[in-house]
Amino acid sequence: MTHPWKDVPMGDRSPQIVNTVIEIPRGCGVKYELDKTTGMLALDRVLHSAVHFPANYGLIPQTWAEDDDPLDVLVLCQFAVQPLTLMKARPIGMLTMVDEGKNDHKIIAVAVEDPEYNAYETIDQLPQHRLETVARFFRDYKRLEQVEVDVRTLQPVTVAHDVINAAGERFRAL
Image (cartoon, rainbow, N blue to C red; front, side):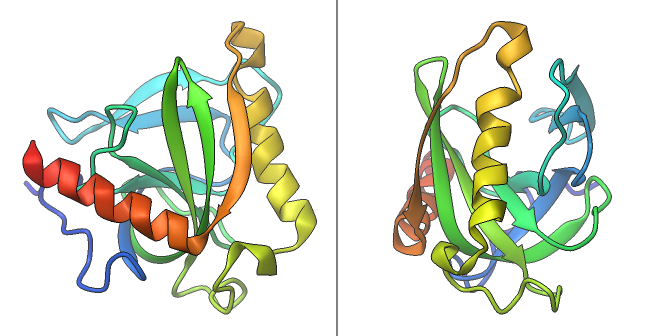
């Protein structure tokens, strides 16, 4: 069996186009997380707040982020994508939050195969409402768990590329 995080490559055109493994479909109120040992999808928790994931959420394989997990990615797509789907995505920017004292980068990307989103190349091309929806989700999703997160400003695609490259280097050093 192929391990979705360890065995799937980041992609030949990384960081411009990356492979992603979806853990949570858009619109879901349940947080699934890939178990790093088995490669199976595990239930992390049911969200306590009345929110749902604003995009398909997953990881970029063969990366290791500053929060001691694979690098997170939100893939904008007009439809919810099933968990453990492998899809190609183009990073267009990044949102950073501080959670439990660690930087928790969220790469924002668009589905390469989705004609509604694949023309976007930078985060500033997205509608302002879409950006505010993503940021608001991360401000609110842990609030009823009594966990405060510090959501920082959106960052351009060049910063996202640097973070992806650094996360790939950290994975290779593991």
